[in-house]
Amino acid sequence: MEYIWIFVSAAIINNFTLAYFLGLCPFFGVSKKIDTAFRLGLANIFVMVITSVCAWFLNTYILVHAPYLRLMTFIVVIASTVQFVEMLIKKLSPALFKALGLFLPLITTNCAILFLALTQTSRGYNFSEGIFFALGAGAGLTLALVLMAGIREEAELSDLPDVLKGAAMSFLIAGILSMAFMGFAGLFSGA
Amino acid sequence: MSNQPSVYEETLKGIWRENPVFVQMLGLCPALAVTNSAINGFAMGAASTFVLVGASFLVSMFRNVIPKQVRITTFIIIIATFVTVADFSLQAFTPALHKELGAFISLIVVNCLILGRQEAFASRNRLPFAVGDAAGMAFGFTLALIMVGGIREILGSGSFFGIPLFGDNFEPWVIMILPPGGFLTLGVLLIIFASIKKMRDKRKLVQIES
Image (cartoon, rainbow over all chains, first blue to last red; front, side, top):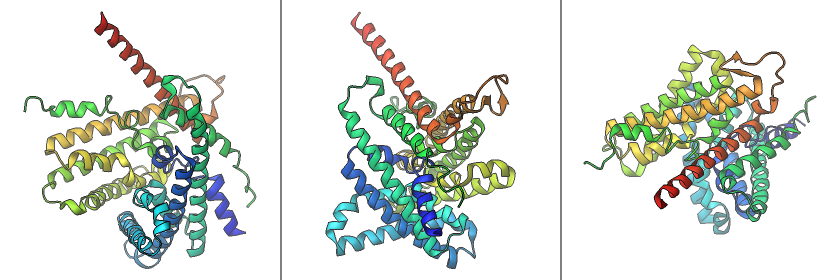
């Protein structure tokens, strides 16, 4: 039950993109097509799980001795681990690499990833809780991306005033989406 | 050298013409996440200014020493150092503010605006230009944050920098200080700026024709 709660909370109630404003660059940049958005989301889930494992390992074994180095260690270790896994995938499964590869380096410097690692630390999640948190956060990002891409695909076809085209419209759509997600608040208030 | 922009011009461009938030759409996460009040926006802007100017200073100073292949990693470590300093200083001097901004102070590290300036400007230009550029960009960023934060605070809580503006009859638009308010405020601001630009372009066109 505890795990489901962590998952749902990260995915829907406290959606990383729509409630915490994390990972907005890909959210606005790569949300033009549903297919690309979905693959970016999958890559996100993937990197988040790796991040969670890295952060747990660092916190438990290394950073207890030097907590002030947390930020630097997180960034460097996460970035290099992702790069390493990327090379591994390229070698082992070219098909998977083709689907995710392009996005992996881009995601590493995404604020959602670092936020995941930091929040996991400050909430004191253990190993498996961390994984569920990462899965939930990634699923939430994917959901937000795909929804956004779906709406934008439709919006492209409609006749908008000049000043609304591009970024401004995306922000308004995101605002309305975010409002819709607010409806989930209190879903688990008893838990 | 005559057509090279001066330090002064490099500083000014970040405030309006190349404003990081409104024009370049960089650093959006903090620009929306912490701006539910003007003071939070200001604090975030100040912390980012410190990091951006400090990092640009160091990067520009060592630009000939940093090997090309590992430059991004070097930039990130330099930025992370300044962020750690800013994080601990805020925690020590203004614990309440630090609590409110939470993890977003640490997230300055991955603010694309800061890394972007190092890669695009500080690592290629002399010290005064790099610092001028950083200061201008940071000022523009802070201004945008205060603007978004101010609008959201005025509408959402009926106050500005914590000072109540309206009488008791004012019903605050709570939605503005909640997450959707951030998206909507920035969206509306972008529409306003786009309309201003369009009007200006039109006027320019009329002037050329006549």
